[in-house]
Length: 71
Image (cartoon, rainbow, N blue to C red; front, side, top):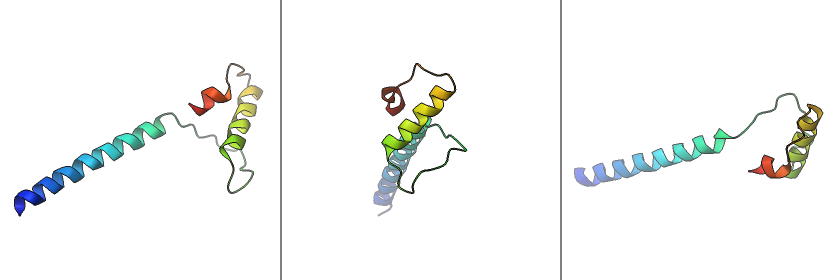
């Protein structure tokens, strides 16, 4: 019984490590822009991306596109 418990514990730890790794990678390239009002509660990703493009362009960043934003 203790061997099975040890195996389960090891498996859970491995799964936990993989989940943590995925979460770190997922947040690695996120940018949080503060002070931009949300237009609706369920704002579409396209709406958010267009808003980001407008923000970047207004700051003089012209070498950016939706392709870059969505990668």
